[in-house]
Image (tube, rainbow, N blue to C red; front, top):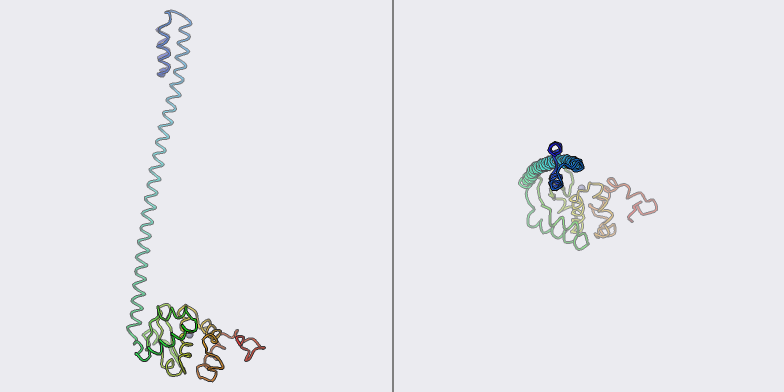
Length: 262
Ligand SMILES: [Zn+2]
C-alpha cells in the first residue's frame, strides 16, 4: 500500500487522480488488485497531469505571443499615425507657403498696374452684358466673378512686346489688361464682346489656337458675322489671325472662302 502510494506520488497525480486514489482508501487493505488498481489510477492521473501542464505551458506561450503581437501591432499603428500626421503637417505647410506666394505674386501684378477708368469700366460692363444676353454664361461667370481688369501693363506684361493688341490675359491669375484698341479700334460693344469672349477662353486655360477657333465658331451666336461686321478693321484682322492660328477651320473647298463654319 505504501509502495503503491510512493509510486503513485512519483507520477504527481492530478486533482482528479488524487480523488480517485482517495476513493480507493476505503477498499480492504492488502488487496493486490487494489495495488494494481491504484497504480493504474496513479499512472492515469500522472498522464492527465502531464497533458494539463503541457496545455498550461502552450496557453502561456500563446498568451505571450498574442501579447507580443498586440504590442507590436499597437506600436506599428502609432508609428503609422505619427508618420501620417507628420506628412499632413508638411503638406499643409507647403500648401500654405504656395498659397501665400501666389497671393504675393498676384498683389505685385495688381499693384504695378492701373485699373480702368469709370468710362472704360462702363464699356467693359456693356460688353459683358452683351455676352450674357447671347448665352455665353460660363464666360460671363468668369469675367464677372473672377477677373480683375487693368488698364495698364503690370511688371510681368511689360516684358512682352505688344503690337496692335486689344487685350492680354494672365492665367491663372485671372487678370485681363485692356489696351486702347479695345475701346477705340473695336467698332461697337459687339466687337468688344468678341475680344472679351477670346480673353475669357484664356481665363479657362485655353491657348491661342483654341481661343481663336472658339470665337470664330461662335461668331454667329455672338452676332458678329461677315454680314454685320465684315468690313470692320477688327473683323478683317481677327479673320486673318484665325486663319493662321486655326487653319483647320478654313479647309472646306465647297464652302464660301473655304470657311467650314459658313
Ligand atoms: Zn489670345
